[in-house]
Length: 277
Image 1 (cartoon, rainbow, N blue to C red):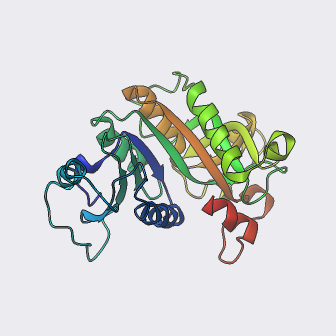
Image 2 (cartoon, rainbow, N blue to C red):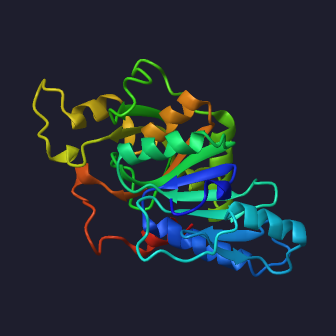
Image 3 (tube, helix red, strand yellow):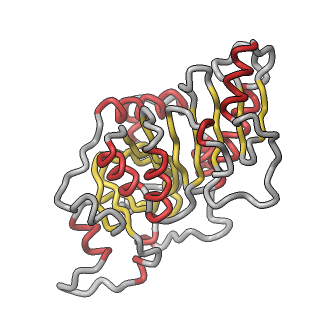
């Protein structure tokens, strides 16, 4: 991750695109200008440390421990899965890791973060919308998972259900309502709860939908999945496996079954606003 494991906080966010990192860093640096912020520092890859204004000696000691007294220097190239930490004195801050694309990365990172015993981890990223009623930029709150990632089949058999966690579901729905300032039916128009399918086949939509043949598109339709990505089910399953509370909030970036592919220039202003939120 390019950071010391001592810098990890008790709440972890996992994402698959740089957009979210940029927003997180911008928010973190804004918070560092506020002497009343609950956060005392922002750690970036290379253990680069931005301190909050007016720190106490005890806060400074916490930050030095988090970076292991290393002289922070930004790396020439980012590591494979860079991490960013908004540090609180009680380790109750937020760590955000860009795990990139794919279930293998998701398993590798959560295998390691689980050792630190976080209070929770949440997948926050992009997905393909599978339903006509969805639009680019809509949110998806997962309440079930179809596991076609194939990286945890031996450790956690597919017949094991991965249940939604009520406290996390309520917290995520409340957060979307708070940030968008929407409620009731207006909130439901952009936030949909349903099953998320995760696959290790990046080109699943190119396989034809033949009659009785079981193709990914057919299986996802049978499962009533509303969205598809490559990481969420892995992160939820590993959370279940390691007893780390988990959740998933995604933003629809494309609709491959409806001819809206993820191509340059397709993102509308609405979509960009939703990503920033």
